[in-house]
Structure formats: structure tokens, C-alpha cells
Amino acid sequence: QVQTVESGGGLAQPGGSLRLTCAASGRTPTTYAMGWFRQAPGSEREFVAGLTWTGGSADYAESVKGRFTISRGDAKNTVYLQMNNLKPEDTGVYYCAADPVEFIRPGKYDYDGWGRGTQVTVSA
Image (cartoon, rainbow, N blue to C red; front, side, top):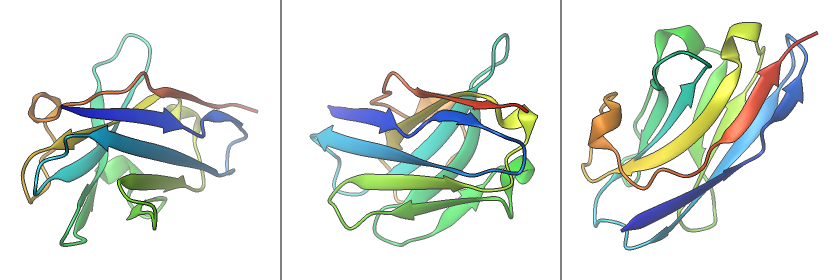
């Protein structure tokens, strides 16, 4: 069973930046992908970005392409989400989770090991 802990959220102004960190622990599958999702009040949890753990392939939601970057940290089982040029619509709780496949899928039900999330608020 994979467990994740997200951190790094906070308040940012429009145009600002934040970097989120996801630390995964527990029994990670041999091959897996890590995904970042977000959920705004009253909305469904949506895919933001994903990264294959061994292949280094990444994918992004159209709304964040060119602004967000997902990457793997030097520390084992750490994934980052660098968020630049933040917009008010990026506000929400950000979660990470693991998918036991070696490719990226955007469906939230494919993922497991959800953490409690970290709040990101973008406001002037």
C-alpha cells in the first residue's frame, strides 16, 4: 500500500509561483506513475500532471501546459510540481497519488495512496 504526503501549498498572487512536494512511502509497485490532481470547491478532482517513474515521460492537463512542470526528486519516491504564472483558477486542494502502471492515465480511479492534500490559493 502506497502512502503519500503533499506539502508546499500556500497563498500566491496571480503570476506567482509555488512548488509542491509529494513524498511517497510504503509498498510502491515495481513500475508505476505518479500523478498530481486538484479539487476546487464544488468541483470534481481533476488530473493536473503525471510522470512515469522510470521512463521520465510526463503529461499535463491542457489548462496547465507551459506553466506547470512535474519532476522527480533526487530523494527516493519524491515528486515535485513546479507551478509558475499561477492563475486564480488554479486554486484548490492539490493531491498526489500512484498508479501501478508504466504510463500516464488521467483517470482518478486508477490511482491509489491519496494523501490529505495541500491547499493552493491564488488571489490578489
